Length: 240
Image (cartoon, rainbow, N blue to C red; front, side, top):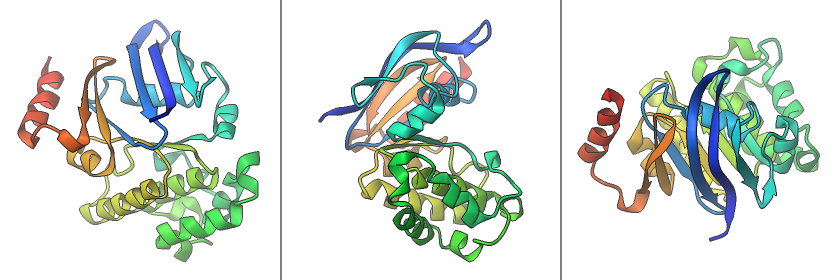
């Protein structure tokens, strides 16, 4: 399998506070990856570093063979690496349809904007129903759908999702899980951060356990340990 994204010895942090401590990982061109681990151990920092929202202090990031280390986020999105952050990053006074249409701003996305919009509305019928509403009037789950929809409008070659079901009801979580699974079946590779390991195992090919800013373990989803062992792995790390 060819490799789409490669991280080599990534170190990053905030000021003098280190967070990532030599992370090396990869994503194949046709696979999806899950990240899990205790809160505050570097998962979101890793996503922000990959997508250019913060620069690593050392290390190298390659996307489809091109070095993107320290590249601006707009350039990275233009290459097709798209990060859907949690839904509270939207412009609240913009309408749903306007937000989606303006998200197809990169050159690679403009020609297919109409088809992409149809795809988003098919995946998330709630957004089609609320296309004239302002983003700030949407529920938390609907804002998360809109955030993912905006990312899809960019015509991603790799889609990053940061805790897409955080704080949602079981019903909305299931609805989003089905939509994310449908996105994966279109052939778009995913990187998904979630606390629910079973959720990740159903959606991805491999998992990385992120602990103390490092990759502590790699798990093949098809041959994963049982639930009890994963929970011991997870909570054992959290208690250290």
